[in-house]
Amino acid sequence: MEKLIGIELQLPEGKLPGFYAQIVKGIADAAPLVDRDKTLLFLAGEGDADAVEQFVSRYRVGTERSEWAPLDESWSADERLFTDFGVVTRSGRHYIDLQLAAVVAIVPAGDDAEPDQASLQAEEFAFARKQEEGRRLFAVGRHHAELLEGVARAYGCQAKQLL
Image (cartoon, rainbow, N blue to C red):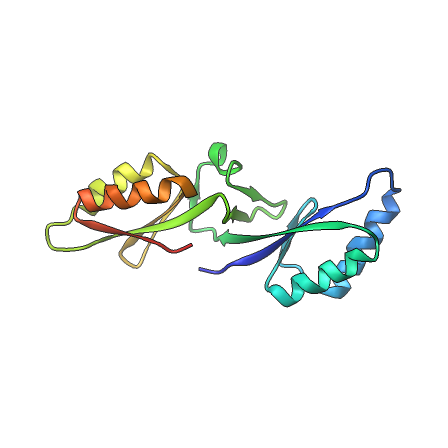
């Protein structure tokens, strides 16, 4: 799965609207944005993030860097819970904050495995899910990733943390 760099802009208060517009235009020239949500910018790599941070420092704009993962449209998300762990941008794309969330795959570990039962229990903790290539993926709060490992073992499966 792909990881992105998130840059949260900490804009100074009391500036005119043109100030923010000038910064946004300059950022677009400094590095290509993958997406954005208000003052949170999504960038493809460290080099792009460095360029944005260098640019905004000229305007005395603070930044906070974090790691995010995009979830493509094949994921089914519980919108009520999703925003506790990520954001949905204006373009409708879903991103999870990797400090708060993890992606776990549940796969059979042997002939006696019960992946349907393991997945049924994993559903209780997931805020997004999808099935791909014979495995089930669950986006859960990072604090639940270890719990899913125990659930998987109980049903003869393995839980592999992908992110």
